[in-house]
Image (tube, rainbow over all chains, first blue to last red; front, side):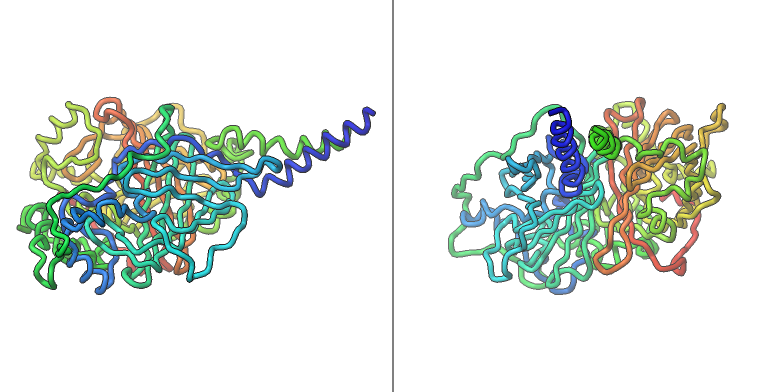
Length: 281
Length: 245
């Protein structure tokens, strides 16, 4: 009897050891508070595409955007694509669903906010759907562990915006997220690729801090209302007619080519082309 | 019973790691006595050294352009810090030949710059910047008993943690978190984590998470993360002195 017990315990321990490779290496569930010490939203001024390596098509579309579109009833609740979770001012509430028999994680979910859909990261090895499958606001995401790093890959997002100021994203955009946990800090690296509107991958990161205060898993509901926008119009700007294109230059000394997201402006050598403080107006 | 014991022994390090993900990797604490370079996690050993260029894809107007006086968005400053920042005088910094205040360890990885990471010796990782021509040394050895003179880059201790590098810097001279005079005091400490990821077009991305703690000038730890792309060589390396503006 003693011997058979030992075999059972041994088998369970060995199973746990083998299964470890398929399960979380670190715990990432919980409430991760945003500290917002980085200005990732970049939505203080209507034409702020700084740091986004837009191609010419992306730039033209971005400059045609008017934020008054958000007053249209049909657009008030459109929300932002999954990229917004590393840009918005909100924290991350992450939880997992586990297989009741195996104990393995089937999926992680990052909770929603009013203008951000919940993001489910499937960990069970299921494939991404066909390219003809429906695209949604959050898209479809699968994840794997690479050592202690959770790597998530998102496809099937609806066309939307890379930034709230109107820098566009297409429905061919993809996002790779890498979650690095260091003690009570969770750093999320986002690599966003879009063959339609980006000249190169847009890479940004954001850190969150573990919070003892629980974050809500969802935000308040979005409710539409008449905000004075005529149903006959979609606010926009024609080419070369955006009145805000030089606002970053006059307020902050940011050259127009940087404000409009020229790819070369994200590299250090571009700084040599910027006139010193106080000379650009 | 023998099987149980053997299986348990295999699992011990993994159980310990799962309980404390921030803890050093097994054996990490002993690297200083042996050879930090040789004991680097495989991922970092191959990939961390080389030339790295900053992607300024976030906080562009605070990093590429010197912000104007009074533009302190997103920094959790104390009232005392705000008073000091409001008195920022770039001409005075220039006149006193103190142009490198914004190039100290708590702020330097946020600058638009290239960095060259190399091993100075088996237990010291060296990080040079072209912008400001600063040198940081990450010591895997035990820190010296007396801290010595305070410097712009302070004294950095380093250790491997799982597949990441952790660096803690103290013994700093006071300086600026941003070029427009947002101060950190000499009692500030910077904790950093270096992680590597693949770049979609080949090569690697380096992510540096920086946590600055300053009881005097920060209401809470200032947390930012910056990313870099690895370059094939140093052909774009462009040493330039510190600038105030």
